[in-house]
Image (cartoon, rainbow, N blue to C red):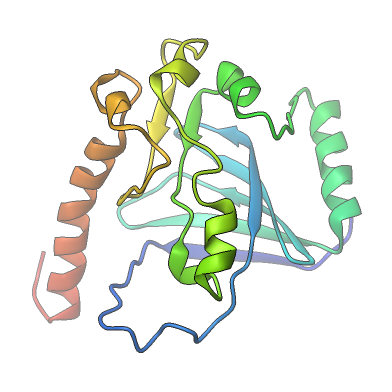
Length: 193
């Protein structure tokens, strides 16, 4: 495959938006992404958003950064070609809209809330909010070592009963993000780490 590629150094950055002045400045975009591989050394995913498809490979995180390779797929057909190439390499990606089936074989589930602020109006949001929920019933057939992550805050997508399971890693995830944000704020304000 010949295509334009981007090789970047990704630096983790999060921003806090205050007030409501940002609302209505953009449009909601539904993003579909699937992880082809993920471990401590590398993450490989395919992301589809509107008419764009990207293959992203991220390397090991070092401090606040990691190497990233992004390959723009020219259309959804190219994404299918990449999946076929992965199969030839022995990686067996799975695509399903059945959450129960997906969780059964998953090692990591990264859950996000359906973001009300990304919808043009409440009616559109109400059509999809609550369309999925991770709860203990769903986790009955999950692997014992399944990890559930979430950027928080959650709304209805993870039932609080899951918090007490060994699968719940999202509070630790949020806790570990605190010193990183503190260090970034210190640097931005001219301090030293």
